[in-house]
Amino acid sequence: MTDWCNRWDNEDTPWDAGESSPALLELLKDHSYLLPTQGQGLVPGCGSGYDVVNLATDERHITGLDMSPTCIRLCNEKLGNNSKYDFICDDFYKFKFPEGGYDLVYDYTFLCAMPPHMRPDWGKRMAEIIKPGGTLIALMFPLKEKPQQPPFTLSVEV
Image (cartoon, rainbow, N blue to C red):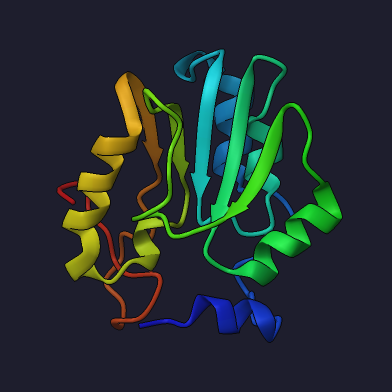
């Protein structure tokens, strides 16, 4: 299994493009009506926090979650916490989520970082933390078959 904490500690973060993904920016620009306009949201495996900041509004508080203390420290140093967003260091499968659950969960590269045998646990946890009627946005990347290392191949069926 990938040691994400060690990768952050050693600045081995080739996935960090220095900004949110073009897919999220397009979603916010052209399809924002698909997102809940208020409530609480989560970005698991938040990386450098760009998606957290871009999803946050005065009415929609977003929490960035990562298991790496170094990752969260860097997010807090660069971006800080405020009334629109915050960052927490915890285990996605065990952290205490807000009562009632999240209105929005945005997963850009979190599912594809999980080894395939963990996918049922990912689905079960998402069902627990997203409130009824809430929104899950999970990008399907990568779709092309590749060696068994993160990011792991996904499919529409998954």
